[in-house]
Image (cartoon, rainbow, N blue to C red; front, side):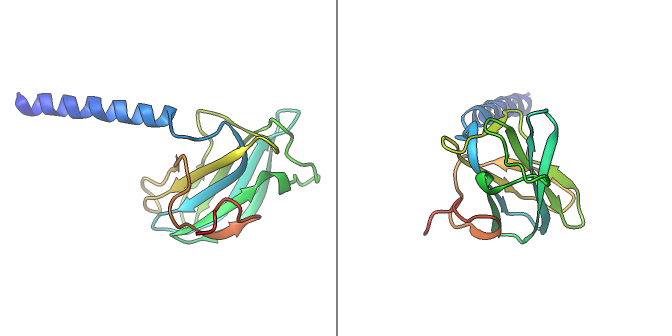
Length: 162
């Protein structure tokens, strides 16, 4: 009986902790920069920056990345253009997807949508960890992780000088 009560208390505390983190993770709703750090036991081979255009169609720009564990991807959305050379529209919903080499493609699109803002946007920090085929989803980190090494993308302004 005591073990069962302990399990229920642990489950309740876990649920409270995860729901609070999702609400108050520090992630801005308006973004200009997106960063993805690889803390997984794999290589992220490609990253797609995606957005909805004025016609609500999904556009994307692919970056061949080869991001090994401990390294990161950084994108300044103001520098990204579609295949038709159109910039990301102000206020467009934005997200990224990452391809794990020899593994699945992971969407970093979250329940809370993020929109592009050139002048008022903040930095959106994401992290992937786990193994090639297990527990490798994108997670909001809320702020920069200590010491990520920039490796790929179109900018390194996601990371302050240490």
